[in-house]
Image 1: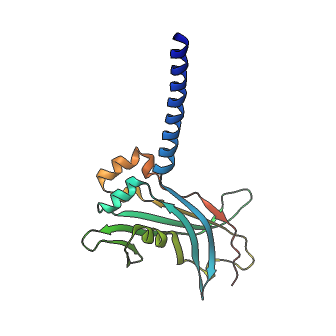
Image 2 (image 1 turned 90 degrees about the vertical axis):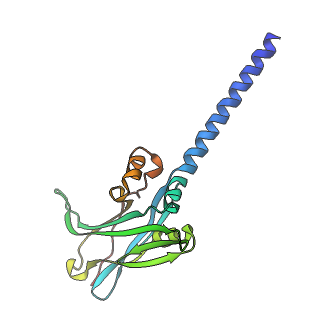
Image 3 (image 1 turned 90 degrees about the horizontal axis):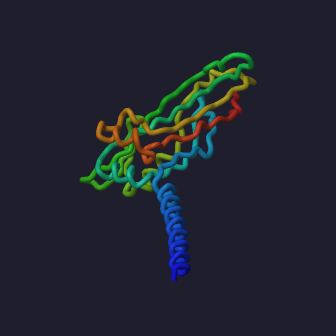
Length: 194
């Protein structure tokens, strides 16, 4: 009888460990937000260069609920072009910060995306997120700022602006992994020509 009881306890303990591991693994995967820059390039225009990038954005349930409740989320797109130096700090050519605001309007039941003073409306959060993740035609550099044949390094970063969150959300955001939404530092060597 004792052997049977010990065998059952051992099996129950193994089952409990497997269940706890599965629970925490799915919670960690499902709960976190993510932002990942997939591609970025500089596209030549008449007298300038425009940034074109594709960002993979996923919001946690907590962030989605905050948007639905009417909180506005502000995102910052930071672009920098530098001229690399061998034995000193890189020479900064240009640094550009671009802001995009995402919110939900309960009366019209639409998601709003505001950038460069222009507002776009969307029926679903997925549509608004797709638009947010597609950075295009963002003028970041004049052709006169770069030299023909020069070697440059471009850096792109996108993140949630915690400072513009309402105070009630700032407290939650500081102590929660759910609100840590920032892309990796994406670097590439653009081919610039005049």
